[in-house]
Image 1: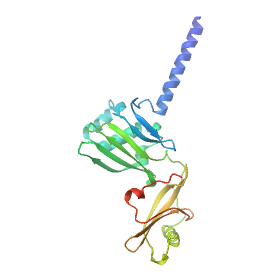
Image 2: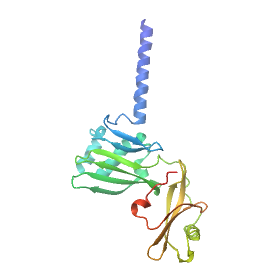
Image 3: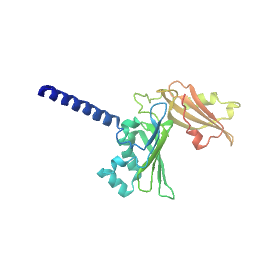
Image 4: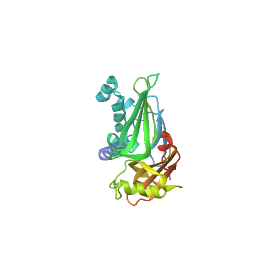
Length: 241
């Protein structure tokens, strides 16, 4: 092998290695510990990641260490999600997820719940939770959410009152007895990659009857409904059609 051929061969090896490194970092999977367990949802987002210290790649990060020392585990979770944004298929965790609750159990473990939103509008049934141990190390992420939603029209054509009237018109039995007590905008996934802007209308009759109607904010079509008196968990159940 002459010098030129040898030089070209080494350049090829370096190029292949460079492509591998760039690919690795672009997918942001290099930081996943070998012992970690990961499962994916049908939409391609991780629904379950578990490991002894999933945030080990941030242990030497000055900002992350400062948050850990101050016990600011909500901000730690956001930095953790930001560091894995490509793996998680999330462009901007702070903009796309709102912390809805955090608790510390008797063992000192922290549990942070996050709701997925689009421009501040809740995405129905799309959320995740991130868990940290007593040493403020992330050991578990789980949930069901969407890859970053883009180009979604969030301007309603119908007024709130029109949506409420549409829901009442389709309520069962004694329609005159129903009243709309809640009218709130949501993003509803009615199929893969099919987000729709909807009004969730809570209809009430008497003391015990509750109906939740999801009316398309564009044309008023009822896209989903729940009957009875759902608890908080069932109210967050996603549609995965």
